[in-house]
Image (cartoon, rainbow, N blue to C red):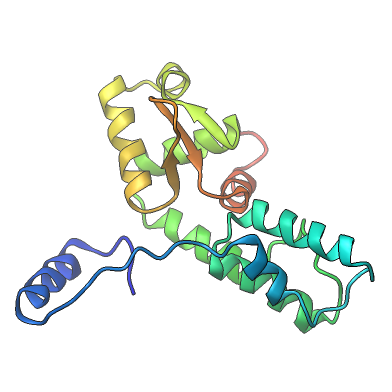
Length: 178
C-alpha cells in the first residue's frame, strides 16, 4: 500500500504494473461500527449509550482513518485509561508533521493558513490572504488534495481537512505569533 509517493517511486510502480497484473483497490476508512468494535475491550464509562457516543465521536474526529483510530485506541490501551478524544498520540502527531515537512514551503504555507481558517476553507479566502494568484493557490490546494492532507468539498472552490486531527496538529504547529 502507498499514498503520495515520490515521482521516481511512482514511475517504478507504473513500470511494474505493465509487467505484473495488479489492481488498485479504493480503501475507505472505518465506519462507525468498525470503530465501536475496536473499542470493545477498553475501559469505558459503563453504559452502552456512552460507548456508542464515543465510537461516533471518534469516527467524526478521525473520519474513520484506520491509522488515527488505532493510534488513539492503542494510546488509551497502553495508558490503561479511557479514550481521551482531545489527546493526539505522539505517533499520529509525528506522522502528520512529517507529511507537512515533506511539502514544498509554499504548499505548506497554504496548509498552515487553511488550518487557521478552520476545518473547511474557501479558495477565495485563501487567495485574499495570500500574495499569490488564484491559479497558484488552487495548484497548491490540489497538491494538498493529492497527498491526502485536504479534500475537495462538495461546494466548488472549497476544501476541507480530511479529518479534524490533521487540522489540529497543523494549527498547533504554528507559533502563537503566526
